[in-house]
Length: 135
Image (cartoon, rainbow, N blue to C red; front, side, top):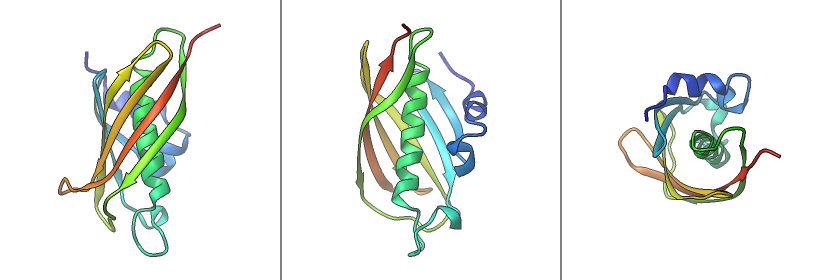
């Protein structure tokens, strides 16, 4: 099942992902991909994309992947997130690709690779999403 990535981008209107400039480019239940432009207001004073921006980007992509895998009426929230940083980036676009490690009834675990335009790995994020079942 393919999901329209433009619809996912639209879902984030008025929220942090829109403010950051996150744009979804591919989406299925098994893989979600988004991109983010490196801008001055997302950088550290050292001129590199801020680690917090990378973490927020990865969190958005994995949480969105969880949401398209939820049963009807359920919601989600992040329980835990671990980020390993490997390289910095000063310009261009970065991409985040998330794939499931576990999709259970009460939790889902996603692995997100954040890369630069050349495919160089910038960060690897593993996060656990809680499934909030309707009451």
